[in-house]
Length: 605
Image 1 (cartoon, one colour):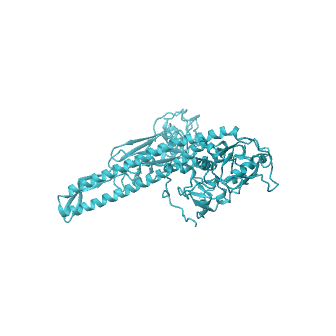
Image 2 (cartoon, one colour):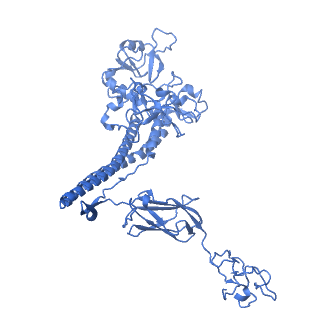
Image 3 (cartoon, helix red, strand yellow):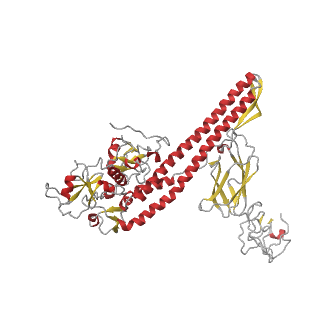
C-alpha cells in the first residue's frame, strides 16, 4: 500500500532524530526499519530503501527556479544534458525530514546509490555470522566464505567451484552481483582462480570495509577505476576509449586528494555554523524562559493592585490579564516559530555534517567521488540559508500601576501594561535635505520614532541603521552619522563626495521605516557670484574704462565694459561675472579668463 504524503508548509516538517538513531541509522532504513535494500541517497543526505521510496505517493512539482535540480543520480552521469525547458514534473517527500525531492527522469531508481550504506549493511551482516546474506553466485544458499580477490560472498558449493573457475561480474540495479562460471552457459568467461584468497566470514569481523566492486552503469562488466576531470564523474576503461575519448582522465587514487580536500574545506566552513545555530537556539530558549518569568511577575503585580477596588478592580484586572495573555501568546508564538526554524536548520546541518564526516572517514576514494556532488550541493545550500541569531522578541513587559486606565463601573482605575516598542512602519522621516544635497556639503534629516499606535516613543536607545549608497557605485557607501537625541528622535547626517543619484536606506530593528528606501539627488557644490549685480559696468565701476562685464557689451571712447543703450548691453540688470539676469542664482563662471577679474566692485544696483 502506498504511503500518502503531502508537502508541508515552512518548518512544520518532521525533525530527524539524529544521534538517537544510533548505529542502526547507518544500516537500517528509517522507513521500513529493516536492513537497507538497494539504498538511495536523497538530496537532504538521508538514505532510504529503493522499495520504500517507490511506495511513497509522488506529487506534482511546479519548478519556477530555472536552476539545476536538487537531485542527482548515478545513471544521469552517462546521459546527455537535457534542454533547459525540460524539468522534473513529479516529486516525493523524504520520510525522515519531509524535504521535497524532485525526481529525475528515471524516477526513484535514477537517484544516487548509497554505496557507503551498502558497505555498512555488509559489515553488520558479517558480524552476525552472515545471517541474511546469500551467495553472490547461486543466490539461494547461505554464505559461508568470502573471496577477498573477487570480493564475492560464497556458499559451500560455490566456494568449491570458485577454486577452479572465476566468475564474470554481472551488474544488477542497486548492487554488484556476480555469477560463477558453472557448467551451465558456456558464454561466460572462464579463468583459473586457484590463487584467489578465500576466508571464513568469522575472520572478517573487525574489518572496516568489505564492499564490492562498483561497476560502470554503461558497461556492467567493467569496474569504475578512473575519473574524468572534464565531466567530473567516475568512468571505466571502456568509457575512456568511448564517450570520454581524449578527455583528461586519471585513476581515482590520483585525484581523490584534490576532490577530497575541497569537500573537507566545505565541511570545515560548515561546522562553525552548527555551533552558531546551537548558540542561537540556546538564546531563544533562555529568552522564552525569561518571558515566562516576566509574565508571571507582571501577573502577580496586577493581582496585588486589583485587591483594593474589589468589583471594579476585579473587572479591570481581568481585562489586564487578558491583554497580558495576548501579548504572551503573540511573543511566545514568535519565539516558538523561530525556535522551530532554528531546530529544523540545525537538524539539517547536523545530518549534512554527520554524513559528510562519515563519508570522508569511512568511504572509499570512489565512494567519495560518487557522492561528492550531492554532498557539496547539500552543504552549499545549507550554508546559504539565512537565519537570525538573535531572538525576534524580548521580555520588555512592565506594569505601570500609577498610570490612569480610565473608569470601570464608575470608578477611576489605574494600572496599565506597557509594551511600548518602536514600530518601523510608523516611524517618520523629516527634513529639507531628504531628497536633495550638494557635493562636499553636509546634508541632514531627522528620524522620528513612533510605536504601533503612532505615538512618539519619547525615549532613545533604539538600533538605527542608515546607509547612503551611490546608484552607480554600490560598493562605495557614504559614511553616515546618527545622533540619538534621547527623546525618540535621531539626527542623521552625511557628506556626499560626488554629485549623482544616491539611495538612502533607514532601518529600525532591521526593518525599513516609512518612506525608506528613497533617492537623493546630489548636485554640484553651489558657486557664489564673484562679480556684482549691476545695471551696467559704467555705473558700477564709477566710469572706469578698464572694467569689463560678462555680457560682452562695450562703450565708445575706449570703455571695455557695458553701458546703457550701447552695443551688447542686455537691457536689464545682470551679473558682471557670468551675465545671469537672476540675482539669487548660482554662478556659472568657470574661472577662466573673464571680465570678473578686472571688475572693480563698487555699487550693486
